[in-house]
Amino acid sequence: MCLLFDRDTDRAVRHLWAQLEQRGIPTLLTHTHGDHVPHVSYAVYRTFDVDAVLATVGALPAGAPTTLRFDAVGLFRRRRGALIASSTVDLLERQEAVVAAGEAAGADLHRYYRPGQWVPHCSLSTGVRRRDMAAMTTAAFDILPLVATVASAALVDSSTGRRWPLPHLV
Image (cartoon, rainbow, N blue to C red; front, side):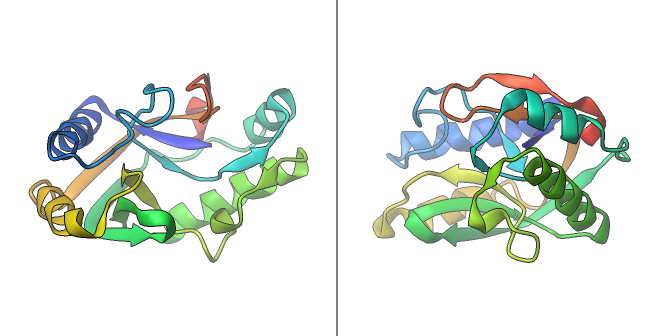
């Protein structure tokens, strides 16, 4: 369940991905199917029924227009580098509601997306090596701070890139 960015933010992140790829640092540009888009995931479901999740999440009330402020670079387990967004009360409450709706539909939530454990982030590298961490961080800080406008939301099958729009979730 992903928040998708406006054109300017999307372009800035894609440009950063391209710079990292030129330095030999793998990003979502070349990960799996290569059809990834810059985003922040509210929830990652390991298994789910598309129609059931669309129905329960689609029944949530519309969210207010959202902006995210990215001001940090982080590294998660399994060498995943990311831009880290500030957590606001509204963002955390909205994420919790989306998670609850997905789980009510029987979706199997990945443990890192449990409310209270979730860190809002936009993935940069899918496998940054220790020797490349400084280069990734330096390149990321060239675009930070980044104020991102959330333009839409979608349920995304990360194995194929297929998207089901949920524009009211912003």
